[in-house]
Image 1 (cartoon, chains in turn purple, brown, yellow):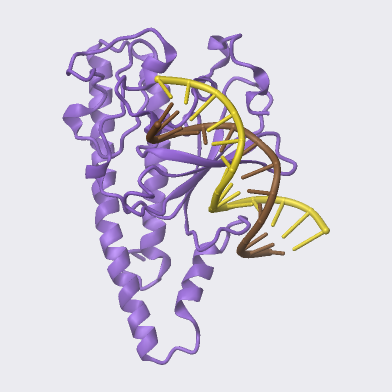
Image 2 (tube, rainbow, N blue to C red):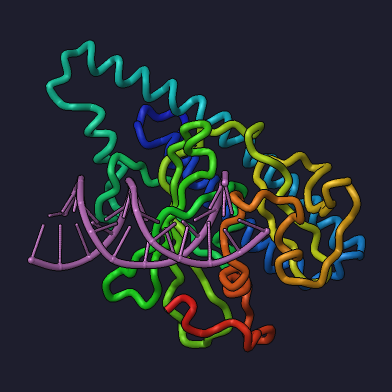
Length: 272
DNA sequence: TGCATTTGACCTTT
DNA sequence: AAAGGTCAAATGCA
């Protein structure tokens, strides 16, 4: 049965979640594939263009579904209320949304998606860290982030990032990223693009809503192209406001660290 | 000096 | 009571 045609309350939500998960997986794939290619080759440009189109498509799908989702849910809520609904529909929705998830409490926060990634910070949004906790029995601490526009625009979106325990081969560091509550901040409020060009071996995506023409172009405040060997410059636009940067240099290095590129400057226990 | 991050304390939920 | 989430004072940095 077509999920969009069903009256199932979770229908739109599931589709949105899946599309968002798809986006996150595409980001991972992007980060893995691009470094392999010669950044100046036509092949790399073609791959880059394909990624841009995929992201553009998923953005449109999410936008459409979010509109449909909110209006649909509102209509169903109204319908239940008119019926007198002794059952609390909103609670029912919340219960449905929390079903099948092992998370402990999250005050009124709706779990959106979970992602396992090497690049927990390049998800297209700007975040501000507001806490860090050691979780019992976990090897690594969990960091808590909220949308950088939570204050300005009241965006409720938050996420948690926790490094996964090593699978034993030690080649790649993976992070569990959980997202809560949809962003309501407008893209106009986000300074784009916080995306940089791959100078040689990595091309991270960090902006979800950027226009295709601006993707992966790294320029300075005067529009000049910038190429810098330093790690920070590889992943941060030079004039990026400090309050919108998310990870420290060490965390960034850790997130992208691959065994063959290990730097002795990065302490092993930074996440421990 | 202002802003972001860190971190211990407090709050909420199970 | 324990565990996880959030707050807010302290700290660090530009």
